[in-house]
Image (cartoon, rainbow, N blue to C red):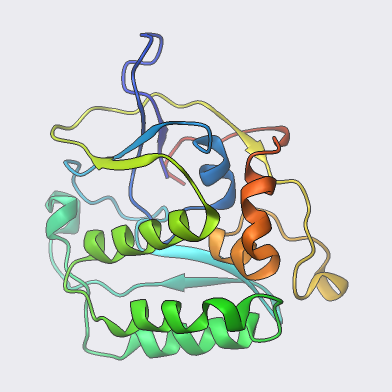
Length: 212
């Protein structure tokens, strides 16, 4: 994913990020203190990265969830026009995978109805589905900022992002702490304490802010 400030170095320019299937924890922490986050809505779709993918912690370690997209020239398609493929019921598969991964998590029962509803909505466009997920994450983590959409494309200047501080994960005794996951893992494991975690600073730094 790309995260940064267009034309960094000029004061007062808001943080901007590309869309993704759930924000990552380090991504969320990097803009936690920002009053506004702008989502890049004018780029063309790029393969790879987290635009249609996320990472969660499952029984066998890190699991990647990928949203299938309709075939076509995605590299030339405006990001808001990229359509989700519903030839297979991928959302049910993803939901069952989330249930398996987090069914025993401390806050799964607290969030499961809302999350299942999001998966059952069957969005037509990837950007709209991601936006719904981000808004849900922001509500449940307690982010006080405002999410806006860009009106023109600008290349993102990269910036340093923090490495996640360890917290208790569901399968930590089996795999140790797994970093680099999406914010769903944090919510399922720490619930409302996510706000204190995200506002408490990060350990070290990790150069992110690039498409990966």
